[in-house]
Image (cartoon, rainbow, N blue to C red; front, side, top):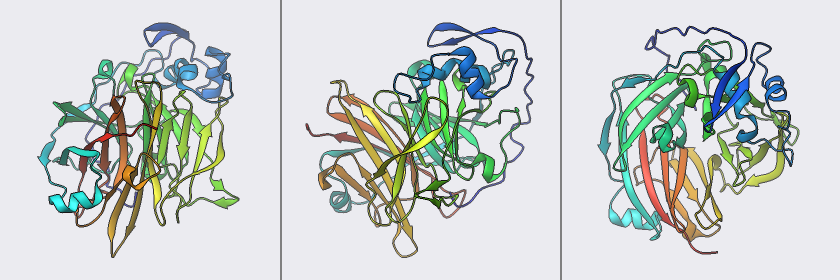
Length: 381
């Protein structure tokens, strides 16, 4: 993220929060008793609500911590608040002519949709992380912005339709302000929680949108490292990507620079560590998105999205789902390309994955918010 638009007074509502004693919350249909009268610190709540949250292998999983995080994010007595509907104009676009597309997009990939999104609301922009919501949570896409907002994008017959917005609140119930607090980048959805990674102040927060909607407060999952290989990480080269492993463990990836994008993981005690691995970023590219997609046959496929930019060549995006060039998609001029950062994917069958990517327009009139959908036929390994 390079730019930030000032937040307007779009949502002047205040949330009435009444703290009470032990109260029942529901996680995956099961009631859990949680007492949040004490410290809102996540680790304390984890110990109080889930004594066995250390995990069988020491790794953090949402299923082990959901009750504590929900109790912190939606304190007892918090009324549910719905996001605010906003206008969204959806304009179909073409990536380029057939010959241009053929040179950069493999035959195994079909462009199932491409749109430019605009709104009269100046706060709609800077879309970064992206997640697909399950049907019980309303379906569609959820995105985060680098101005500290959630944006819901409805889907109708495979195309974007309608939008809603809400602003992220800190653990104190006040809206996040400034780049240090609100520069949201990565997003995953699990157990009714939106898990969000932030640059500037490197961390992962959980928001229980599935329980109290836009009234959800930030509940700390983990602080993320500020150094890699004993060098400070630039505040704008941090955790662009967070992802769930096939077994539910939570990982993160830093954009880094010069083809070095380190990967890390969150531990059950709320700390984080580097794995020692790096994403295979092409030269001068950085990792901005990573998805591990479980397939119906029990296997999984890892998708990674990398970004590069310079004044001469403009934006260049590489989407990979395997080691070979046949499993690589390149978006660059003269194709219609912008600053793509968000990615979400789902398996349509054992050998077909639908991938959604969205671009961050940096709240600039010179850039576009583009939403693309690709259907990828994957090879049998």
